Image 1 (spheres, rainbow, N blue to C red):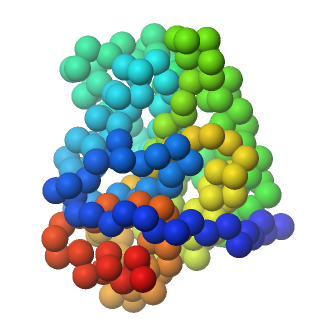
Image 2 (image 1 turned 180 degrees about the vertical axis):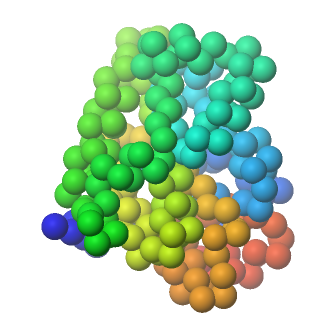
Length: 219
């Protein structure tokens, strides 16, 4: 059964990677980062996750194996003991494809209700962590499941999953950043690209050349 929703955020901010700052994503914000190189993504992701851990909050990463491994190395190089953070429940790192496999139907579509359940369980776990002041810790999430779907030529499924996240943002308190490599988009993805932008409150583009497309997303 498909879960569809009319929940759709209003794009509030559009910028290129030279001015990208994920700290500008507010609570309940849902940002998308388009990028041209892994180095570009990992630089931003390391800062995002590291800031959450320094603050005693929770970082949730649903990424590719390569990106999660590189992220762990970068965090360790900056003095973070990711093993301790994992043990405290403040750093949750999951494989994007394995997580997708839990709610993709036999026909290759997103089972919206199952996706809602799987991600809700994850957010329940993250939201249960106590901050240093005794209150609930903030949850900062990053995901690449949608990028995998676009790479598999299933842009509609990616948009359906973005909609599930937007529905969950009306239930849970979390900040979300999604990452899409520009390499997964071709000319025939133009309409899907604009629709994906429209599912986010903040759009961070890979370069100045993308500003024209960013303006289209904001209108």
